[in-house]
Length: 476
Figure (cartoon, rainbow, N blue to C red):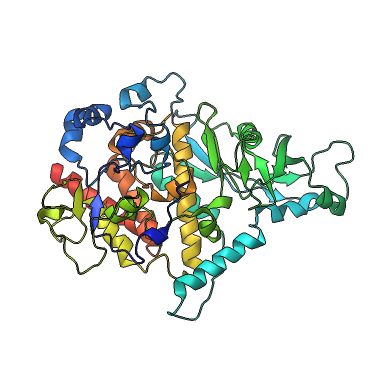
């Protein structure tokens, strides 16, 4: 994770300059972005892509220190043609065309104690309270709202818009629950099981009971974790006959192998299943993981923030009334950098600028948030990861072309910086798989976002889409 925190940039940043190119740290990682011609060819329709794609609509990956592309700058690119020819990719068919979302499993009374495993430990909950008091010091009486998990139906609704053209349904899970795993005297009294912290629990599905490994959390953020691979195996056994893919949501923290501290999700793309944990996306843990709220997408493209993350002095004065010192939004008159754009220039109406304007129009997310706002913050994070993991079920690999919802991520810090939209390359794959048009898909997403305009992510995404639709309409 990045060692740079929000304290390195002034509070309530207005993001006066936006950067649409990789950070100054990218050359150190030996990351080389594809050329404009390569980017256009990667969409499978280079003539059209060249006409309707700009850097202020689809910026480059940030490539900040410890980002996924910084750690693995040579990750293989998957263009539209290579995706289309992928032998292990599953086509959507008339018989298998439904994406199912399974709500977090219930907990049977014989293992009722594992409900506490999904709750952050007291020290981490206390850090959220202390941070909230610091944010509000001198403004209002310190207070902390309760953080309530988002509704699963809201996740389903978002995915239905993101995967417009496919049917997205909540899986009937009346029999899906965690229970004891029968091994010797393990199926014993609740009191005894609670004191021994079982190495295994069972996940009861409609057809079988699957053994799930558990372990103590290495960093003690949660009491215990569940094994991701075992849950993915369980998800495979749950696939309905008409399912194209299945997403299993879990409230517990996860691990994959002995080297992991934790993992938030994974997909077995060829098997058409994904598992996503909601645990680490809890806003109560933001201080623990140094997760940025002020510079979450779209404000992650703020030049001052990017410079701070790279340890470079900021070229922008972070004040709303301060105009750029060079023409055309360049940070320096002596050495113009056309990758930087003023976010306050009224003449600029790109999707990125529209998104930042919507983001900054809401109260700063570093201030006190209501219960509904905290729930919305949590919802947005789950939606981003859920849509990403299901993208792998469509055969879409990690994106190296643009800042994109299908980018790889190396940390929770990086998760928050990534956008909810698909870049032109991955959008071409999505539309080919689902049969929807770009306009239909954007309309569905705007409809969802308009119901959640109090949430920074969705307000910014709605503004981005509306500006993008204007671009598409102008391009004919």
